[in-house]
Image (cartoon, rainbow, N blue to C red; front, side):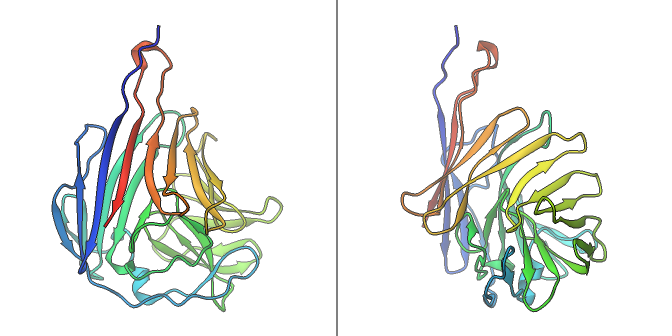
Length: 284
């Protein structure tokens, strides 16, 4: 007999007022680690200029300040500002990463994390897909590939906001920027972008730049499933790991604003039963 367990719901409150952010959780569980009651001052930066998209990738213009977004590079100094934030001593950017839920197992690790970049609080998502959050915020599996306005080069934007510009060499071939060990290629036959890491795991992107899957060196896949959005062409529906376990992104009615991160109930056997869990984002 399968034992049913009651779902547990955790509320994450994200507040923005006068360049101040506050993170709060209504209940602390061992499965998540959220910063409670801290206040961080975030400087504002000039807005990115939008550009018209060519076929395939979204064409973007990158503001200099936005290039500072993401976790501090290994060649940059950083100092901890809070348990989940670090200040980049080279650029002054404050980077915050708040783990929500994740697990390891066969295939790529499932990792749902909320990120905030002070260098990107005025950044406007120029792609017609993704997830709507408050200014400066991003979340796992929303990384993408964009083309750069008036150049043949492309920029790979990581989930945490890090931006790496890959220089065009030949059709499908791009030079890796200095200090970076990832390689980027374009498979014209499959119409896919492939970013290969130093450890030989891969991130595969759709022709339009959306993340499609993460593949480990053994060929196990974590898949990102997209659906039509309310105003965006595409929003993330769910992320499914190699074992079939999933995380769902749920949105406020009639919008593309992320409202709930949901982990459905798992009942493989009584001794392994796990209740459904949900994390709700409240915007203020």
